[in-house]
Image 1 (cartoon, rainbow, N blue to C red):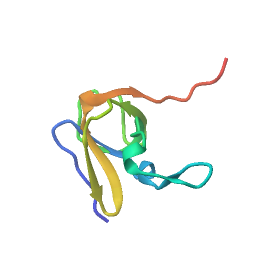
Image 2 (image 1 turned 45 degrees about the vertical axis):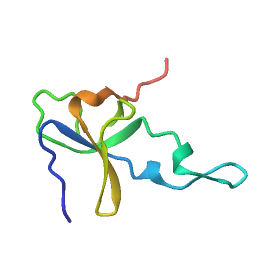
Image 3 (image 1 turned 60 degrees about the vertical axis):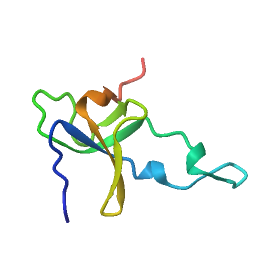
Length: 95
């Protein structure tokens, strides 16, 4: 198995699930051009970033229309800079 090692403060998000074929309730296939791009994804790998507030496995929100999508060993990934991450999704207890 191979592993990616991002450099230059790059973060790699696993967006494989977001690229699956989508259908409407009636069974019509939604074309890629009509799909909304994901805004959150889990971190697969990241470069060595000093005092990073995130780690691999965390789900993060990121800026729309950012990064570069690439396929690696049959999975889809989004490469983006650390600065393009807006927030970490954190589970909390309901009050």
